[in-house]
Length: 527
Ligand SMILES: NC(=O)c1ccc[n+]([C@@H]2O[C@H](COP(=O)([O-])OP(=O)(O)OC[C@H]3O[C@@H](n4cnc5c(N)ncnc54)[C@H](O)[C@@H]3O)[C@@H](O)[C@H]2O)c1
Ligand SMILES: O=C(O)[C@H](O)COP(=O)(O)O
Image (cartoon, rainbow, N blue to C red):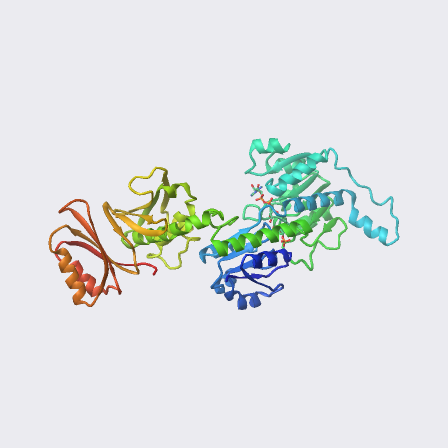
């Protein structure tokens, strides 16, 4: 039974779902990095929010880990490239807390406009300072939305409802979408110049880090108010403090901080700054949503292989997962075969899907072909990192699909182009589930692969089979199965021999020296 650790505070619904779906679960929150490292080795899954840091060091000792599930959106606390390199799938729940977070941003905007927190504190202190607090209306004001994705567009929609004008800066926002939302798409400088309120809703990336620094703040309208319910690193906190101290910025409402948990900050103790402790996603509804979703997604992945909302792997629906399973074995064998018969640098790989398989989601299969292909050449290749490795090495990867079947109802063909040659290997499923190799290079064959195989290209001449059998027999190597194929009588032929033990180098040289043998290679496959 797969085992999951929940290391941040999640709704109890998550535990229920894991158990219902046959996943063992431990809940241990507040772990220090060393404590997490000490126990992570025994878990197949790790369910987190924003507190747990899934670093390279944690991943290095997470020897059984298959999936990190983020009950929420931002994954900046997960080293995704390191997870990918380790073959760990990282998934999040991209929509479960969007409305809640957008509402928090709107609440912050109202709180800033009417100084509600300071007025509340003053009133509780019995001061009744009716003349001290003079707010501003939101009506008719311009809201600048930086990052108009899921949350930014909900904020924009609510702001339009409040009769605000909304301008948005988001390089990936289409003109049509902007029009649908009733927002004006502008460049960042224009947004800074025009906005009375600015709200941030981008992920934290190299491009967005410090997007509001002294230079940007200097371009804003005097009296601007700033809301950040996205990520702390988007604003340079010292620059914001200076702009508030100078009076250029009238107020800021911050849910997120450069360092979290933020127990101290240069921004604390200033009435113009409203702070909440990363509460954007903290409503009962959002927490139920994300806990339920992450537990469902992680259980489905661990139990059935379905992949939903993964950031580093193609999706596989729960419906597709069982259909893809037998093809996964075939894809791995074909990739492994092509990889082992490929001797010079890989330039491109084309995976051709014909017949029934062409109707399936083939991206995971292509990832597995790449894994099989690269495994003989590189250490630590898995289906998660194989596409990344191929891209890094400039290996072109293509898929083609043909719905109509030729000789087989379903067929996968892998065509590998190397610096010197083209290698082709194709396979099908017998009885819907048993992988069979049906073509190697241009030669038809019908073979089941086993752990130890001998692949021989030979001229189709009498006496070859006898000599090969004698050579193997003399070396004490038992033949399990023997498959032959040829293009036509007397032409190019292949022999694919399954043997009961590894073929030692010396024996391979003797086989290579037999008359009619063009090329011999010992191959190995997962038992
Ligand atoms: N405070 C909280 O508790 C809380 C809760 C949920 C999400 N978040 C954070 O809110 C942010 C937004 O989440 P989302 O679900 O809307 O994400 P999203 O991916 O749907 O939207 C992000 C938008 O930012 C845009 N973007 C990317 N780079 C940009 C750039 N350089 N300049 C301008 N725009 C850029 C993207 O095109 C996208 O439209 C994330 O950082 C997330 O972690 C915070
Ligand atoms: O990215 C998110 O989903 C939010 O920052 C929520 O973070 P949390 O789950 O720690 O509240």
